[in-house]
Image (cartoon, rainbow, N blue to C red; front, side):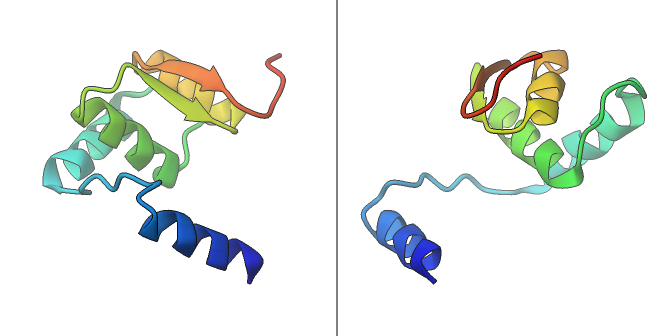
Length: 87
C-alpha cells in the first residue's frame, strides 16, 4: 500500500511523463518479435517499453533489468544500468 501511495503522489506531482501506447508502437513491437535474433530474450512489456522509447526518439533507456538492457543495446538504445551489476 505504501508503494501505491508513493506512486500516486509522484504521478500527481508530475514526476512521471506518460507516453502514448499507440498502433505504431504495437506494430513495431510485433516487427521486433518477427526479426529479433533468438539469442535475445525480450518480454512483451519490455518490448513495448523499448519500442515506445524508440518511437519518441530516446537515445538511452534506464533499466533495473539486465535482459532489458541487453535487448535495448541490440535495438540501438543505450542502456543505462540502474541497480544491478553488469556481467
